[in-house]
Image (cartoon, rainbow, N blue to C red; front, side):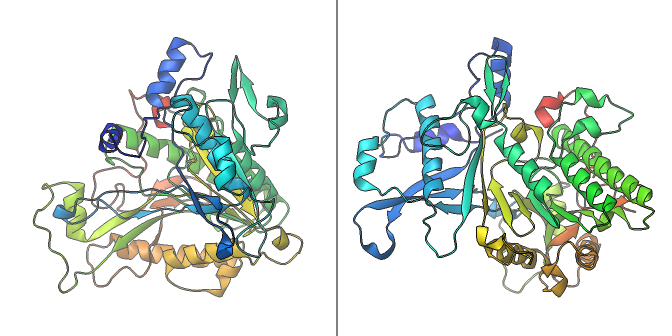
Length: 491
């Protein structure tokens, strides 16, 4: 994977910017083979920027610490007509005590890779910055924010002033190792507490392989064991059994980053299909036991994002064209591109939100593969009531939905309702028809598309009629079983 890290390091040489490469180091105590696997296969995947800023009101000469969480940047080939595809991403700004937690996280990693060099000493920090009081924020609405990490040095989330031992931190210990799965735990606890609905955007969605019902592979050999997909389907099942409404909306990219026909992308799509089918089967069986005639998609729906536009007078004409008979060329001719979903976010009941670097796959949720960081937040004043939450998380979800759907609808105020999920599905299906059509008569009115699979009432997945492959590609939507790539690379 070309990340140009060495080029970045060289660019900043002999400047005031100190740049050091940061691989995913093997944990102390691993065997040579385990250490080699971790160092070569997995990455330091956290994404944070920590800065100081002026104090509100300008009354103090001291500075405060803030953090920008999960920023991402992407390049483009403008001479050939623009980017490979637009990207959709989410990040957040953290202020108050949690921003210091992110600073400590950075310092721990820096010391592990570089040592004490170039770090601002604690004494100097005390001179130039102000430690925030608990629950002191830049606006009047109080927030409860907690930081979660999946890292390789045994530290946990929360960063209390007095360090806790591993049993207090809830870590999972292996032989001579400490594994931090606090991000996975945060997702699971939030799912279990959910009352009405869950909205997810993530770059990947695969896991809970212990629940797959494959006939062509041994599911136990895949080792994509994290619990999030199964927890979601079991949550829906529990609501069906109690006669309550509950809806899960999941937005993923059409295909993961990479060449869609490649073996690795096709393998990931294969794992994703097995994950989706497991969840829909769980829901279908629960509906059958209940004697309900509802469809599994009334409770769980997958979406992707795309854009398609008519040619405009005076629009930019690139001096070069993509290579013939390529996905890029076909997409330009059809004037459509998927919008690549790079977000890693979950909203629960408009009360709780998780944003971070962790994907919903084994690499991110395992605790001993990629190193990750995430924050979870809720607004306490919106919890002590039986009324639906109507705070900033609610407003953020509605803004995301308007960005994707481009229409307001009163049903969006109650995402758990049958009216809402069917309305969203109806809009997404219309968008897919326009996106995938052979002709183009108007700009795509919105960006949310149905994920191009058909779900039967029994939970079985089939290809949409006429769509075994993604538009403009030769890549199978359901992927292909890899015959030679080890699952550890693709889960």
